[in-house]
Length: 248
Image 1 (cartoon, helix red, strand yellow):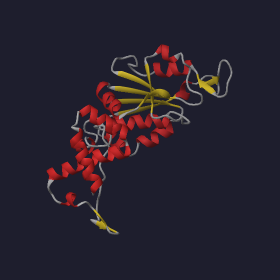
Image 2 (cartoon, helix red, strand yellow):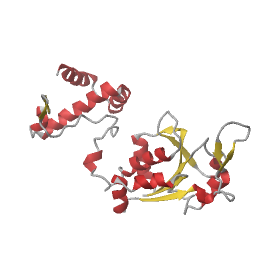
Image 3 (spheres, rainbow, N blue to C red):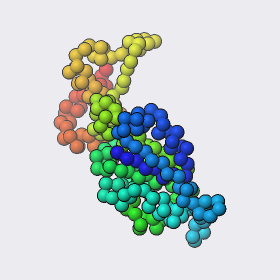
Image 4 (cartoon, rainbow, N blue to C red):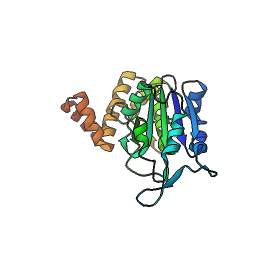
């Protein structure tokens, strides 16, 4: 999969993509990431990319000519397999299911990052752009949301990480991940649950599933309710699991 990121701060993006899973995914040619500096399309001697708001108001807005020329410079920008995303608090909120959908549907994802008071609205009439938010809060710019989107989609691409590492992660089935343990077996009187040391993999799988259910119920009851409804679980069986966990 190909990613193109349009930004006023390319160093922020480059620093991140040269580390960890993203860097390895690029090295293995599972993804490619092109970073485009919007200032390359700035106007005048100072290469201005923004201007004051019509109608008055604080802040500056990135101009439509800069945005249009930057997007037009991307090969096959209007292709059906290319999806343009503007990172915006006005967009639909990112979820694991949305990330999974995008990882399968598109060959090229273009991430447009805003700054200041945002971008000129007319760009949405020139290009088919989806707005996506990473949460109900405001950030200084779109670089962090773009990296979040890049990261969450990249890890879903086959071959980037081990399949078993992602199939039971939080949100993969509307459930949160179960508690994890490693060595030492006991620390300050706190022991690893015996079942995890038993070697009985069917019992371990059962234990982990019950832990995922209970963890989701306690920490994210909204997700728990969704999981119960989506999977049409027997509520009596669920109550048995909850009673068992609360009795321990």
